[in-house]
Image 1: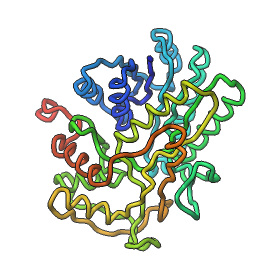
Image 2: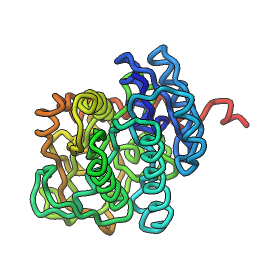
Image 3: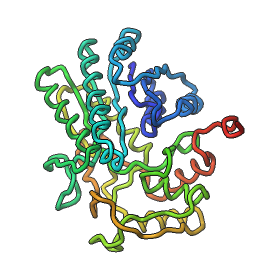
Image 4: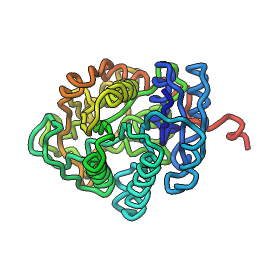
Length: 343
């Protein structure tokens, strides 16, 4: 099949492109490169030996998006494109609502105009907000607590409404927990701009000497060691989940949400300890104040994905740390090319 991947040059998008190509699909990527680098797609080609058709386009540019559909026979869309930093969304809410929601509206309008009704949407566990019980299940009431999470929740609701209006639509809403790790080749991985928002790339940058120490946000949560507990999932497992979801939406109509997580929670200190064992040295860190909106414990019940998508995670925390470290060691400055460093 011909699969359009929006945001395909990003962290999860590039790993999903690898899985799509390895499963025999043709891949067309649309990405504005605002938070990603074209080098990632060059490396996807190196891993798979297969070419990707690339368009540097913003989803806010509906005219250019129409041209992509006119030039390609597209069977389905995997929609990753969007701004994703929780803290930044609190500071710049209008930017997040404009980019994430309007971009998705444009994409859906262009899809419908071209008779393409199959979509896998990159949602997030942030749509659950503050829940009193864990593990989190797909039928819990949703209550996002920051602008980023609300954009994901609003888009989920928009896609539900779209399906009600036109039963041709088939959409999988994939609620990610905490993606970590990298491709085992060491060629693609997470390449955040500035100080990372996520724990594992923060750890790896400290370990490789790019940052002096790790800040642990909150040591007084009601958890065994006082630090927040999260469900970390290997990005390759996550990418495989998109292939399984794609197979599902090609067979059925309607909208369904799926948790993509391991079902196991690890505290921040447990992750640090595991990483220290993997690399054989200590990670300097300081425990500081909690971040606003952070919750104590969050982990998935992934049973629905196992039953309906035939998907389960296969990679444990040790492998997540090993692959993250390999990526960081082999790419200490991320995707920056060596010739750029000499300028």
